[in-house]
Length: 398
Image (tube, rainbow, N blue to C red; front, side, top):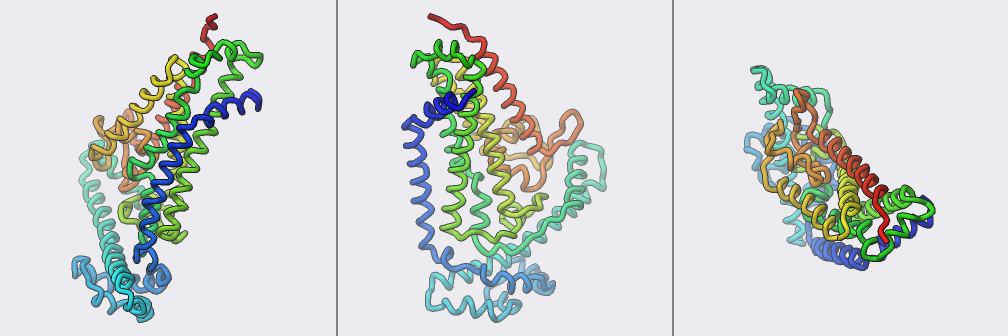
């Protein structure tokens, strides 16, 4: 491989107008929809400046007991008995602006009630696990619960007040199938003809007999595909994060992922930003795996439609399945594995870390997300080896 060959392969990919049109349309539509929220009073006015005062207030055990006694449905007036006057004044100063005032009141009430409820739900969940494990019936499910209980006991996960929607929106970066699906679609469109286009352009014979050899051509295409995948993933994901930060404010850098609404049972101890980085890395691996499948199919066919529809059906089918079924608690089943081990689940990771999840592999309990990473990395390697074998053994036809 040399730089000239690499630049040629990159030009072949990036010269496709459909890629640029699709990316501009996707990002433009996403930007338009997100910017609608800038006018929302709840976005402009948040309780984040009062985080320190409110964090001190919710540390009061009497406050916790009171909210629990009200079944986590305390009103604004009831909550003001336990919070500093400075917080009340901060909210009251917006009383002339009805939307802003109402938004701050709603945010305070929901944040406080949800915070205490999530703490109690997490404690109850761990206590229930301990009871189930104590029965010790020897089943694989009980062993999975015991392993999860041990993880809870050995992992320090902090929960904080979730005072604004930005943290939830950052966590949701790959949760819905649409956005990660668009990323994969761009990868499919860009790489579907990486080998098969040589047949239609009549350049296959020249490439197969080039001075650098078939290995050099293969490496050039592989590096070009990797660069394209990295660019697509980073541009799309970072664009999402920047626009979300503009529309909702960037979340506090220290707020934990467990503080968001859907992850209060997680064993993941990191921050919201840490979880986003995990999702981006997962999307990169998913992109590389899908890219290797596309390259393999393209090397084996003479028509770009075969890798386009083949890879698209594989990703789309497993993603649809993952969004259709309900994953069993704690332990995977045969019918849930196709969804749990899908590329989409590698991108989102949400359901697999929300409450701890394991898969029994010949009696060994493996975290399902870990198994997903191992499986898709193996698929990537196998597909690249098949691609290399298929391409280097092609016969030159006059």
